[in-house]
Amino acid sequence: MTKARDLSNLISTGVPNSLITLDANEIPNIDASKITSGNIASARLGNIDLTNLSATNLTSGTIPDARVSASAVSQHATSFDDNAIVNDISTLALRSATAENAIAYNTNSSFVDVFQDSSGIASNTNAPRDTSEFVSTVSSSEASSFTDLTSTATAQTGFGTGNQAGTFPAFVRSDNGGSNGNWFNGSTIQAKSPTITNGFVVDLGGTYSLRGSEINFRSWSTNARINAHYYVFKNLSGTWEYLNGTARGSSSGTSSSTANMTASNGDNIHGINVSTSGIDADYRATQFGIVHQSIHNNGNHYAGISYVDVNGKLFSQTVSATGNFISNVITAPSSTSKMGAIITYQDNAGVNALNTDIVLQLSADNGSNFTTATMTAMPDFATGIKMAKVNDLSVTAGTQLKYKISIANQSLGSKEARIRGVSLQY
Image 1 (cartoon, one colour):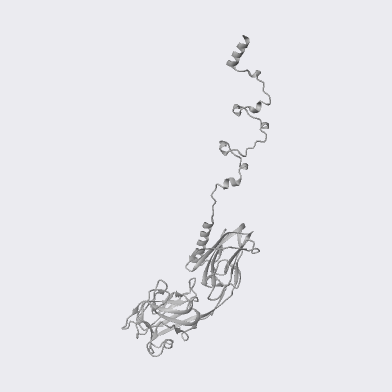
Image 2: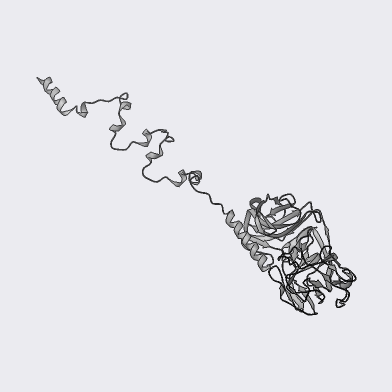
Protein backbone atom coordinates (compact mmCIF):
# COMPACT_ATOMS: atom_id res chain seq x y z
CA MET A 1 0.00 0.00 0.00
CA THR A 2 2.82 2.41 0.89
CA LYS A 3 4.79 1.60 -2.28
CA ALA A 4 1.73 2.14 -4.40
CA ARG A 5 1.23 5.56 -2.82
CA ASP A 6 4.86 6.52 -3.37
CA LEU A 7 4.65 5.54 -7.03
CA SER A 8 1.56 7.64 -7.41
CA ASN A 9 3.33 10.62 -5.86
CA LEU A 10 6.28 10.24 -8.24
CA ILE A 11 4.00 10.19 -11.23
CA SER A 12 2.07 13.24 -10.17
CA THR A 13 4.76 15.42 -8.61
CA GLY A 14 8.06 14.23 -10.10
CA VAL A 15 11.21 13.20 -8.27
CA PRO A 16 12.34 15.72 -5.67
CA ASN A 17 15.78 17.25 -6.30
CA SER A 18 16.93 15.99 -2.96
CA LEU A 19 16.55 12.47 -4.18
CA ILE A 20 18.60 13.06 -7.42
CA THR A 21 22.32 12.31 -7.36
CA LEU A 22 24.42 13.30 -10.47
CA ASP A 23 27.97 12.20 -10.97
CA ALA A 24 30.75 13.50 -13.31
CA ASN A 25 29.83 10.98 -15.98
CA GLU A 26 26.31 12.29 -16.34
CA ILE A 27 26.96 16.11 -16.44
CA PRO A 28 28.52 16.23 -19.98
CA ASN A 29 25.35 14.75 -21.39
CA ILE A 30 23.14 17.61 -20.24
CA ASP A 31 21.41 19.26 -23.22
CA ALA A 32 22.62 22.90 -23.50
CA SER A 33 19.04 23.96 -24.14
CA LYS A 34 18.33 23.11 -20.53
CA ILE A 35 20.64 25.93 -19.37
CA THR A 36 18.16 28.79 -19.47
CA SER A 37 19.47 31.15 -16.81
CA GLY A 38 22.52 32.16 -14.84
CA ASN A 39 26.10 32.76 -15.97
CA ILE A 40 28.77 30.25 -16.78
CA ALA A 41 32.04 31.11 -15.08
CA SER A 42 34.88 32.05 -17.45
CA ALA A 43 37.05 29.36 -15.89
CA ARG A 44 34.54 26.77 -17.09
CA LEU A 45 34.83 27.88 -20.79
CA GLY A 46 38.53 27.06 -21.30
CA ASN A 47 40.10 27.64 -24.76
CA ILE A 48 36.99 27.79 -26.87
CA ASP A 49 37.67 28.50 -30.61
CA LEU A 50 35.51 31.39 -31.77
CA THR A 51 37.27 31.84 -35.15
CA ASN A 52 34.54 29.88 -36.89
CA LEU A 53 31.75 31.83 -35.28
CA SER A 54 29.33 32.97 -37.99
CA ALA A 55 29.02 36.75 -38.23
CA THR A 56 25.27 36.28 -38.52
CA ASN A 57 25.25 35.46 -34.81
CA LEU A 58 26.49 38.98 -33.97
CA THR A 59 23.10 40.63 -33.72
CA SER A 60 23.84 43.28 -31.12
CA GLY A 61 26.62 45.05 -29.29
CA THR A 62 29.75 46.83 -30.57
CA ILE A 63 33.08 45.34 -31.68
CA PRO A 64 36.08 47.23 -30.21
CA ASP A 65 38.13 49.19 -32.81
CA ALA A 66 41.22 47.22 -31.88
CA ARG A 67 39.54 44.03 -33.05
CA VAL A 68 38.81 45.42 -36.60
CA SER A 69 41.75 45.45 -39.04
CA ALA A 70 42.25 48.25 -41.59
CA SER A 71 41.87 45.81 -44.47
CA ALA A 72 38.47 44.75 -43.13
CA VAL A 73 37.28 48.32 -43.70
CA SER A 74 39.24 49.37 -46.81
CA GLN A 75 38.08 46.38 -48.84
CA HIS A 76 34.58 47.84 -48.81
CA ALA A 77 35.64 51.45 -49.55
CA THR A 78 35.84 52.82 -53.12
CA SER A 79 39.35 54.21 -53.65
CA PHE A 80 39.65 57.82 -54.87
CA ASP A 81 42.24 58.78 -57.47
CA ASP A 82 42.69 62.55 -57.71
CA ASN A 83 45.19 62.43 -60.58
CA ALA A 84 42.59 63.42 -63.16
CA ILE A 85 41.71 66.52 -61.14
CA VAL A 86 45.36 67.39 -60.50
CA ASN A 87 46.17 67.01 -64.21
CA ASP A 88 43.25 69.25 -65.20
CA ILE A 89 44.41 71.92 -62.76
CA SER A 90 47.99 71.68 -64.08
CA THR A 91 46.77 72.00 -67.67
CA LEU A 92 44.63 75.00 -66.77
CA ALA A 93 47.62 76.61 -65.04
CA LEU A 94 49.72 76.16 -68.19
CA ARG A 95 46.98 77.69 -70.35
CA SER A 96 46.60 80.64 -68.01
CA ALA A 97 50.36 81.25 -67.83
CA THR A 98 50.65 81.04 -71.62
CA ALA A 99 47.77 83.46 -72.21
CA GLU A 100 49.11 85.93 -69.66
CA ASN A 101 52.79 85.55 -70.64
CA ALA A 102 53.43 84.89 -66.95
CA ILE A 103 56.90 84.28 -65.56
CA ALA A 104 57.59 81.15 -63.50
CA TYR A 105 55.61 80.91 -60.25
CA ASN A 106 54.66 78.35 -57.63
CA THR A 107 51.83 77.62 -55.18
CA ASN A 108 51.68 75.32 -52.14
CA SER A 109 51.34 72.29 -54.42
CA SER A 110 52.54 73.24 -57.90
CA PHE A 111 55.14 75.11 -59.97
CA VAL A 112 54.45 76.49 -63.45
CA ASP A 113 56.86 77.81 -66.08
CA VAL A 114 56.11 78.60 -69.74
CA PHE A 115 59.54 80.19 -70.28
CA GLN A 116 58.39 83.77 -70.65
CA ASP A 117 61.89 84.44 -69.37
CA SER A 118 64.72 82.41 -67.84
CA SER A 119 63.87 83.11 -64.20
CA GLY A 120 62.68 79.54 -63.54
CA ILE A 121 65.80 77.87 -64.98
CA ALA A 122 68.83 77.32 -62.75
CA SER A 123 71.19 75.83 -65.35
CA ASN A 124 71.34 74.36 -68.81
CA THR A 125 73.80 72.37 -70.85
CA ASN A 126 73.45 72.93 -74.60
CA ALA A 127 69.74 73.69 -74.10
CA PRO A 128 69.21 77.47 -74.02
CA ARG A 129 65.90 79.24 -73.69
CA ASP A 130 64.81 80.85 -76.98
CA THR A 131 63.24 84.30 -77.12
CA SER A 132 60.18 82.65 -78.67
CA GLU A 133 59.54 81.12 -75.23
CA PHE A 134 60.75 77.54 -75.47
CA VAL A 135 63.85 75.51 -74.59
CA SER A 136 65.68 73.35 -77.13
CA THR A 137 69.18 72.25 -78.07
CA VAL A 138 69.11 74.60 -81.05
CA SER A 139 71.15 77.74 -80.53
CA SER A 140 70.09 80.80 -82.47
CA SER A 141 72.01 83.89 -83.45
CA GLU A 142 70.25 86.98 -84.72
CA ALA A 143 71.86 90.19 -85.97
CA SER A 144 71.20 93.30 -83.92
CA SER A 145 70.37 95.48 -86.91
CA PHE A 146 68.28 95.18 -90.08
CA THR A 147 69.76 94.51 -93.50
CA ASP A 148 68.19 95.95 -96.65
CA LEU A 149 67.44 92.87 -98.73
CA THR A 150 66.07 94.65 -101.76
CA SER A 151 69.28 94.19 -103.76
CA THR A 152 69.61 90.47 -103.01
CA ALA A 153 66.06 89.09 -102.80
CA THR A 154 64.74 87.20 -105.82
CA ALA A 155 61.38 86.15 -107.18
CA GLN A 156 60.34 82.64 -106.38
CA THR A 157 59.93 80.63 -109.58
CA GLY A 158 56.33 79.95 -110.56
CA PHE A 159 54.72 83.05 -109.12
CA GLY A 160 54.58 85.85 -111.66
CA THR A 161 56.87 87.15 -114.39
CA GLY A 162 57.93 90.45 -115.93
CA ASN A 163 56.04 91.57 -119.03
CA GLN A 164 58.48 94.16 -120.29
CA ALA A 165 62.23 94.53 -120.63
CA GLY A 166 64.08 92.97 -117.77
CA THR A 167 62.88 90.28 -115.44
CA PHE A 168 62.34 90.26 -111.73
CA PRO A 169 64.15 91.17 -109.60
CA ALA A 170 66.09 93.67 -111.75
CA PHE A 171 63.29 96.15 -112.28
CA VAL A 172 61.77 95.97 -108.81
CA ARG A 173 64.97 96.72 -106.91
CA SER A 174 64.57 100.44 -107.42
CA ASP A 175 61.41 102.50 -107.33
CA ASN A 176 61.43 103.47 -111.01
CA GLY A 177 57.73 104.11 -111.42
CA GLY A 178 57.21 100.97 -113.44
CA SER A 179 59.03 102.34 -116.49
CA ASN A 180 60.94 99.08 -116.90
CA GLY A 181 57.93 96.86 -116.42
CA ASN A 182 55.88 95.14 -113.81
CA TRP A 183 55.97 91.86 -111.98
CA PHE A 184 52.47 90.67 -112.72
CA ASN A 185 50.25 87.77 -111.76
CA GLY A 186 47.22 86.11 -113.30
CA SER A 187 43.65 87.05 -112.52
CA THR A 188 43.04 84.07 -110.22
CA ILE A 189 42.26 84.93 -106.59
CA GLN A 190 43.19 82.20 -104.11
CA ALA A 191 41.12 81.42 -101.03
CA LYS A 192 42.43 82.78 -97.74
CA SER A 193 45.22 80.49 -96.58
CA PRO A 194 48.77 80.84 -95.30
CA THR A 195 49.93 78.45 -98.04
CA ILE A 196 50.32 80.67 -101.06
CA THR A 197 49.27 79.30 -104.44
CA ASN A 198 48.65 82.55 -106.32
CA GLY A 199 50.44 85.75 -105.37
CA PHE A 200 53.88 87.31 -105.19
CA VAL A 201 56.60 85.29 -103.44
CA VAL A 202 60.02 86.74 -102.65
CA ASP A 203 63.00 84.58 -101.73
CA LEU A 204 65.15 86.36 -99.14
CA GLY A 205 68.36 84.59 -100.15
CA GLY A 206 68.93 83.30 -96.62
CA THR A 207 67.21 83.09 -93.25
CA TYR A 208 66.11 86.37 -91.72
CA SER A 209 63.95 87.47 -88.83
CA LEU A 210 61.17 89.71 -90.09
CA ARG A 211 60.06 90.66 -86.59
CA GLY A 212 59.58 94.43 -86.52
CA SER A 213 60.66 94.78 -90.14
CA GLU A 214 59.13 96.85 -92.93
CA ILE A 215 57.93 95.52 -96.28
CA ASN A 216 56.87 97.93 -99.02
CA PHE A 217 55.53 97.57 -102.53
CA ARG A 218 54.15 99.79 -105.29
CA SER A 219 51.57 98.94 -107.93
CA TRP A 220 51.93 100.83 -111.20
CA SER A 221 48.89 101.43 -113.39
CA THR A 222 50.36 99.27 -116.16
CA ASN A 223 48.63 96.42 -114.34
CA ALA A 224 45.62 96.18 -112.07
CA ARG A 225 46.56 97.52 -108.67
CA ILE A 226 46.30 95.28 -105.61
CA ASN A 227 43.43 96.15 -103.26
CA ALA A 228 42.64 93.70 -100.42
CA HIS A 229 45.70 91.63 -99.51
CA TYR A 230 47.62 89.90 -96.70
CA TYR A 231 51.18 88.72 -96.06
CA VAL A 232 52.65 85.29 -95.40
CA PHE A 233 56.11 83.84 -94.73
CA LYS A 234 57.81 80.46 -94.99
CA ASN A 235 59.26 79.40 -91.63
CA LEU A 236 62.40 77.38 -90.92
CA SER A 237 60.46 74.12 -91.20
CA GLY A 238 59.32 75.04 -94.71
CA THR A 239 55.73 75.73 -93.63
CA TRP A 240 53.83 78.83 -94.68
CA GLU A 241 52.41 81.01 -91.89
CA TYR A 242 50.55 84.29 -91.69
CA LEU A 243 52.77 87.34 -91.29
CA ASN A 244 50.93 89.61 -88.86
CA GLY A 245 51.27 93.36 -88.79
CA THR A 246 49.73 96.76 -89.31
CA ALA A 247 49.50 98.86 -92.45
CA ARG A 248 52.06 101.44 -93.50
CA GLY A 249 52.14 103.85 -96.45
CA SER A 250 48.87 104.05 -98.32
CA SER A 251 47.56 100.74 -97.01
CA SER A 252 45.09 100.47 -94.16
CA GLY A 253 44.01 97.78 -91.72
CA THR A 254 45.90 94.75 -90.48
CA SER A 255 47.25 91.52 -91.93
CA SER A 256 46.52 88.30 -90.03
CA SER A 257 44.76 84.97 -90.31
CA THR A 258 41.43 86.77 -89.95
CA ALA A 259 42.06 90.18 -91.54
CA ASN A 260 43.18 91.70 -94.84
CA MET A 261 44.74 95.08 -95.54
CA THR A 262 43.46 97.33 -98.28
CA ALA A 263 45.57 99.45 -100.64
CA SER A 264 44.49 102.68 -102.30
CA ASN A 265 44.05 102.90 -106.06
CA GLY A 266 46.95 105.23 -106.77
CA ASP A 267 50.64 105.46 -107.51
CA ASN A 268 51.54 105.00 -103.86
CA ILE A 269 53.73 102.93 -101.58
CA HIS A 270 51.89 100.28 -99.61
CA GLY A 271 53.30 98.05 -96.93
CA ILE A 272 53.32 96.35 -93.53
CA ASN A 273 54.96 96.99 -90.20
CA VAL A 274 55.57 93.42 -89.09
CA SER A 275 54.40 92.62 -85.57
CA THR A 276 56.81 92.30 -82.65
CA SER A 277 54.41 90.50 -80.29
CA GLY A 278 53.07 86.98 -79.91
CA ILE A 279 54.53 83.62 -78.93
CA ASP A 280 56.03 82.95 -82.38
CA ALA A 281 56.54 86.54 -83.47
CA ASP A 282 60.18 86.29 -84.49
CA TYR A 283 58.93 85.50 -87.98
CA ARG A 284 62.13 83.75 -89.01
CA ALA A 285 61.71 83.32 -92.71
CA THR A 286 63.35 82.20 -95.91
CA GLN A 287 60.60 83.65 -98.09
CA PHE A 288 57.63 85.98 -97.79
CA GLY A 289 54.59 86.48 -99.97
CA ILE A 290 51.95 89.09 -100.78
CA VAL A 291 48.58 87.48 -101.48
CA HIS A 292 45.97 89.67 -103.16
CA GLN A 293 42.30 89.03 -102.46
CA SER A 294 40.88 91.73 -104.75
CA ILE A 295 42.16 94.32 -107.27
CA HIS A 296 41.51 97.79 -108.59
CA ASN A 297 40.76 97.04 -112.24
CA ASN A 298 42.25 99.84 -114.30
CA GLY A 299 41.50 98.23 -117.63
CA ASN A 300 43.77 95.28 -116.81
CA HIS A 301 42.66 92.48 -114.54
CA TYR A 302 46.19 91.13 -113.95
CA ALA A 303 47.52 92.31 -110.58
CA GLY A 304 51.03 93.70 -110.79
CA ILE A 305 53.85 95.05 -108.63
CA SER A 306 56.51 97.46 -109.87
CA TYR A 307 58.64 97.80 -106.74
CA VAL A 308 59.42 95.70 -103.65
CA ASP A 309 61.45 96.73 -100.61
CA VAL A 310 62.15 94.48 -97.60
CA ASN A 311 64.56 94.37 -94.66
CA GLY A 312 65.33 91.74 -92.05
CA LYS A 313 67.83 90.60 -89.42
CA LEU A 314 70.20 87.83 -90.46
CA PHE A 315 69.47 84.66 -88.50
CA SER A 316 71.55 81.49 -88.08
CA GLN A 317 71.24 78.27 -86.09
CA THR A 318 73.36 75.43 -84.74
CA VAL A 319 72.15 72.32 -82.92
CA SER A 320 73.58 70.06 -80.22
CA ALA A 321 72.63 66.39 -80.42
CA THR A 322 72.00 66.33 -76.67
CA GLY A 323 71.32 68.83 -73.92
CA ASN A 324 69.46 69.36 -70.65
CA PHE A 325 68.18 72.04 -68.30
CA ILE A 326 67.36 72.06 -64.59
CA SER A 327 64.83 74.19 -62.76
CA ASN A 328 65.39 76.42 -59.78
CA VAL A 329 64.73 74.93 -56.34
CA ILE A 330 61.05 74.98 -55.39
CA THR A 331 60.52 74.78 -51.63
CA ALA A 332 57.60 72.56 -50.66
CA PRO A 333 55.66 73.36 -47.44
CA SER A 334 56.33 69.85 -46.11
CA SER A 335 58.42 66.82 -46.98
CA THR A 336 57.21 64.96 -50.05
CA SER A 337 58.10 61.54 -51.44
CA LYS A 338 55.84 61.63 -54.50
CA MET A 339 55.84 64.11 -57.37
CA GLY A 340 54.21 64.53 -60.75
CA ALA A 341 54.40 66.83 -63.77
CA ILE A 342 52.84 67.81 -67.07
CA ILE A 343 55.03 69.11 -69.88
CA THR A 344 54.08 70.72 -73.17
CA TYR A 345 56.38 70.30 -76.13
CA GLN A 346 56.56 70.76 -79.87
CA ASP A 347 57.99 68.61 -82.63
CA ASN A 348 59.49 71.49 -84.57
CA ALA A 349 61.05 68.92 -86.90
CA GLY A 350 60.60 65.18 -87.02
CA VAL A 351 58.92 63.22 -84.21
CA ASN A 352 60.45 63.13 -80.72
CA ALA A 353 59.84 59.99 -78.66
CA LEU A 354 58.79 60.43 -75.05
CA ASN A 355 61.21 58.93 -72.51
CA THR A 356 63.88 58.57 -75.22
CA ASP A 357 64.30 61.87 -77.03
CA ILE A 358 62.61 63.81 -74.20
CA VAL A 359 63.38 62.53 -70.69
CA LEU A 360 61.97 63.98 -67.45
CA GLN A 361 63.55 63.49 -64.03
CA LEU A 362 62.24 64.71 -60.66
CA SER A 363 63.95 65.31 -57.33
CA ALA A 364 62.79 66.35 -53.84
CA ASP A 365 66.26 66.57 -52.27
CA ASN A 366 67.73 69.50 -54.22
CA GLY A 367 68.89 67.31 -57.09
CA SER A 368 71.01 64.92 -55.02
CA ASN A 369 68.83 62.12 -56.35
CA PHE A 370 66.85 62.40 -59.57
CA THR A 371 64.20 59.79 -60.35
CA THR A 372 63.47 59.18 -64.04
CA ALA A 373 59.81 59.41 -64.96
CA THR A 374 57.94 57.33 -67.49
CA MET A 375 55.76 59.88 -69.22
CA THR A 376 52.56 59.08 -71.10
CA ALA A 377 51.03 61.15 -73.87
CA MET A 378 47.96 63.31 -73.32
CA PRO A 379 45.64 65.05 -75.79
CA ASP A 380 47.32 67.96 -77.58
CA PHE A 381 47.59 71.20 -75.61
CA ALA A 382 47.03 73.23 -78.78
CA THR A 383 47.54 72.84 -82.50
CA GLY A 384 51.07 71.52 -82.93
CA ILE A 385 51.73 71.56 -79.15
CA LYS A 386 51.75 68.15 -77.45
CA MET A 387 51.38 67.22 -73.77
CA ALA A 388 52.70 64.42 -71.58
CA LYS A 389 52.27 63.54 -67.91
CA VAL A 390 53.58 61.53 -64.98
CA ASN A 391 51.74 61.13 -61.66
CA ASP A 392 52.80 59.96 -58.21
CA LEU A 393 56.42 59.29 -59.07
CA SER A 394 58.26 58.01 -55.96
CA VAL A 395 61.29 60.15 -55.13
CA THR A 396 63.75 60.44 -52.25
CA ALA A 397 61.80 62.43 -49.66
CA GLY A 398 62.56 66.10 -49.12
CA THR A 399 61.31 69.67 -49.47
CA GLN A 400 63.79 71.02 -52.07
CA LEU A 401 62.14 70.18 -55.38
CA LYS A 402 63.64 70.29 -58.86
CA TYR A 403 62.98 68.92 -62.32
CA LYS A 404 65.47 68.09 -65.04
CA ILE A 405 64.61 67.65 -68.72
CA SER A 406 67.09 66.02 -71.09
CA ILE A 407 66.78 66.17 -74.88
CA ALA A 408 68.58 63.65 -77.12
CA ASN A 409 69.06 62.60 -80.75
CA GLN A 410 68.57 66.10 -82.11
CA SER A 411 69.44 67.12 -85.66
CA LEU A 412 68.81 70.46 -87.34
CA GLY A 413 65.84 70.21 -89.69
CA SER A 414 65.17 66.52 -89.06
CA LYS A 415 64.51 66.20 -85.31
CA GLU A 416 64.04 69.27 -83.16
CA ALA A 417 62.20 69.20 -79.83
CA ARG A 418 60.97 72.40 -78.21
CA ILE A 419 59.91 72.26 -74.55
CA ARG A 420 57.13 74.80 -74.18
CA GLY A 421 56.05 74.51 -70.55
CA VAL A 422 56.28 72.55 -67.28
CA SER A 423 53.73 72.22 -64.50
CA LEU A 424 55.24 70.46 -61.48
CA GLN A 425 52.96 68.68 -58.97
CA TYR A 426 53.82 67.91 -55.36
